[in-house]
Image (tube, rainbow, N blue to C red; front, top):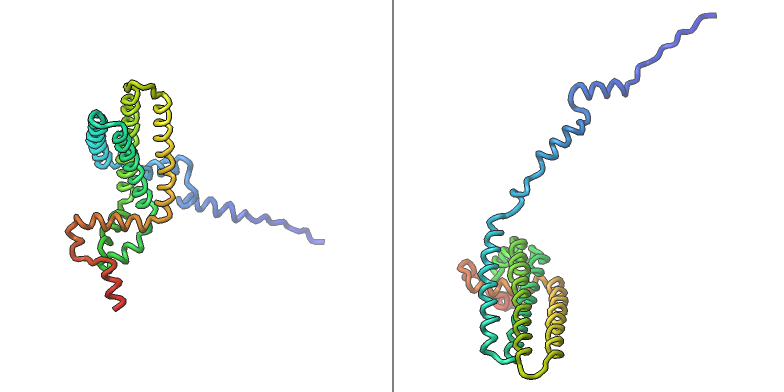
Amino acid sequence: MSQGFLFTLPDTNLIMEDYILDNGNGPKSSAQSKNNAKKGRRSFSALVNWKWAITAFLSSLSISIILSLLSTEGLNYLNIFLSCLVLVFFVAIGVFFDIIGLAVATADEKPFLAMAARKVRGGKTAVRLVKNADRVSSFCNDVIGDIAGVVSGATAAALAIKIALTPQDNFILNLLLCGLVSAFTVGAKAVGKAAGMNYSNEIVMAVARFLSLFRKDEKGTKDTKKNKATDEE
């Protein structure tokens, strides 16, 4: 009876892993992956748009000073009713620019590109607004919106002091004034956000058509109503 021989074959998987690691094509070590992640990660200073930050700071400073002077000094020459109208005006400014900022951030660029190609008035301006949505929304929401909120609060405080200095006891009137200002601001912004999100393209186009009146590159464009009339003919 012949004696059998046993042969053990080498593990091919181990051989392939050794070959791949020796040639540098295998999985990289954790240290190498961390180094590559650090190289691909940008620094904080490179991520911040310092030019826009300085511009927003200077514009916020100048606008807040002007509006604060108008609100505080102007109330000295107005009665309580007109002072309330000034307060409503500042609140409305904040709500209005919040709507514009939200509409620009959520608008679709494709319809405006088609309008710009057909030379519709406001089409080029709308494309610029949507492409620079981060700056436009930051200016409308952060610069104008926040300043209007601060100034409206200061105006409400000055109006409350003016009411308190009257001979009558108007404690309840001051409470109602503060409550109405807060409620009107929050309620108007809630309605404005719904309008800005659902009618974003229409709002952006309306703003673009207004701004196109002051732009030279929009002079050769045509109004949408005129284009529709020519198409119907």
